[in-house]
Image (cartoon, rainbow, N blue to C red):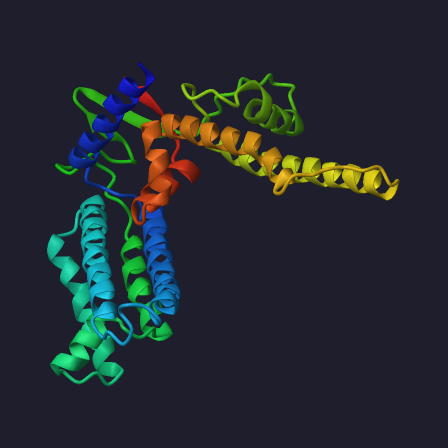
Length: 309
């Protein structure tokens, strides 16, 4: 039953992405930072792979980097166009403004002395070498598209003010807490209640919701709490050993303590996704390049959803 509901919500999420084709400034900036991080990690991964391949079958192959970075650039360009289109839709500009990006890139390449030969163009496009200046300015140009304000009304690409349309419903997002607090409760009480929910009250709850504030507090607070528990365990074990009491500790023995909070963190993430109107199945997307940008934004920043009447 739970899986059927999650699959149904996942299909709804895909449909909402198709219908609502606008992206706000914060989400766009997060996506640009995510693209930068993804590409940088791809370079590092390639360096590591080269270290393994040097003594292998592909030793001396000049086509490996072209295949790898060529596929990477194709995916990267597709994601960039996807984001730019939605950003332009959000502030009502023509899609022709996207041509400013390649014009800016070509201008920079000419400034850096690129000759318009096949070798030079292919090397620039494939990015077989890592150039910090070019790497930074690419994403600075993209980030500039976040400067214009969103159009404060609806258009054919979706609703204004970050709202979404689904069938006959209008879905709005506001900051709220799913944990009931009395007016006389302090912030310390709220922090303690969040940590208690994550580790003790709801460690296996995959059906509820968790607001963005509860997620941040639960994430950081649980991490600090487990650090204290781990240090206490290590201190007790060290004390026992100093007294000369024989004690067998299996390999990775202390790491077993982290299984409990790891499960609690996963279920917390699922509840946070529910609160941002995403299926809990999206949690798998955290391990998929580029999709993890979308998922991480909903985990860390997306507000709580409600049906607007």
